Every structure is written in C-alpha cells, then in structure tokens.
Length: 105
Length: 105
DNA sequence: ATGTAGTACCTTACATAATAAGGTAGTGAA
DNA sequence: TTCACTACCTTATTATGTAAGGTACTACAT
Image 1 (cartoon, rainbow over the protein chains, first blue to last red):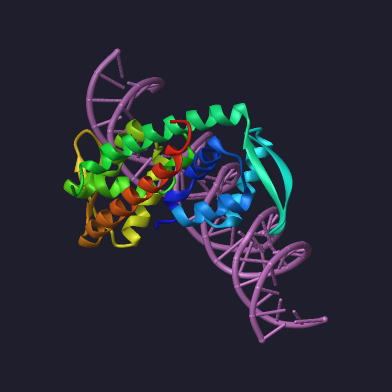
Image 2 (image 1 turned 135 degrees about the horizontal axis):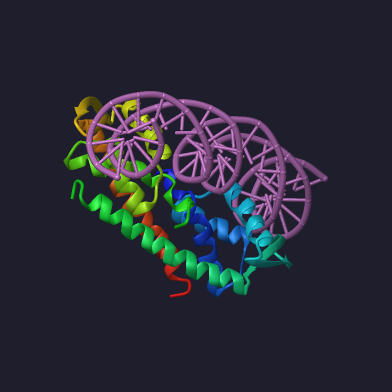
C-alpha cells in the first residue's frame, strides 16, 4: 500500500470510527492496522491532537485483561467535523477520479 | 479543500494526465490548480522527481506566445507505474470507504 | 519464580512532500 | 514602458506518517 496515500485521511478515519461508539486507543490502532496498515505510533499523536482541538473527550477505565484503557468519545464539534471532512473527502476523490479516468482505463 | 488529502495522490494524477498526451509543465499546473487546487511550486519538484525515477522523458519546444515549453512524456515504466498506482489508489479509497461508511451516513 | 505472549499506552528521530512566497524571463497589448 | 499573461524554477517552513524504540499490566506455561 502506497505510504503517501495515507497522509491526511487518517483524521477522517478515526473520527468516523468514533462516530457511533467510543473506542480505546489500542482498539483503534488494531482496526486501522488491519484496514489501512497504519501503525500505533501514528495514531497516538493524532489522538492527542484531536483532544487538543476539542474533537474528542477521554477517560480512563480499568480492564481485567491488561493495562487500563483510554477511551475516546466524539464531542459535538468532533461529529460536525467528521461530517464536513467526509463531504470534502468525497468531493476530493471525485475530482481525482475525473483526472485519472482520462488515463489507462 | 483539505490540504492533507492531497498528499501522495498527486503523482498518480500527473501520470494519469500524461498517459494519453504529453503535456508541458504549465499546462499540468493549470489543470491541477483548477481541479484540486495544487500550486505550481508543488508540481515542478514532482516533475523533476518523475524524470529522475525514469517515469517521464522531457524535451523543450519553442512557443510563439511566450517562453519555451518543457514537455513531459510518459515512458513505458511511467505507464506501468500509472496502472499500478491507480489500482493501489482504488483499493485504498475502498478501504477508507469501508471505514467512513460506518459513521454519520 | 520466571519467561513469554498479548494487551495497552507512549515517545523520539527521521523522511517525505505539500505550501507559501519568492524569483527569472519571454510575449504582446495598453 | 508598464502591465498582464505565459512559463519555468527555488527556498524555507509545516505537517504528518514511519520506524524503532520504551514502559507496564495480565495470564499462562515451564
């Protein structure tokens, strides 16, 4: 998978995964590692950014099967941002599609 | 348009635009500025990279309406790469789609 | 008791590539 | 002769993903 493709969409992916259900960091990293091969060293700094920007709230909950988990839940701002980013993303891939469709077919 | 979305797809876009017809740099920048708001300061370094990697050949042709134009034409390697990148891109946006479709709907 | 695997979090140094903002120079029209 | 447009290029900055490391808890097997 091309490395550069991943740049930038990640924020939208995380916000989308959090949209319906809050999740903890390791859970997010597992999903994103499987689907788009993103490493946890990428996710944790992003999650900190999302909190700093007011897109998520966090809390810690103990787990009986390992270390405590840090849960992330979307704020209203986070939800609005997800919707906006999603629209922008869909517009963007449509524009890219127009460009690349002229090519090899 | 979200800045970060653009990262990495640009190479595919340029290769795609060159797939059928050779084009000169300013022509490419005009198209990409209009469609995905990419500035020429981004394109020219990329074109140099593409040449260095053997994806394009270049030649200069005089123009009667302004400065000489530098044309870029895809090599066989460039064509193969366009096809490969396009597949990777389509796979990638499919994976992203799976992730974001779970969200806001 | 000790080691290993899995869970769960985090940090740092590095590479890449897009952006903004600049520059040079040719042509043609006001 | 100044302006607008064409056409190319460069530099410093910023953002963000990667690789590679680290800490620490639980459970299970040796």
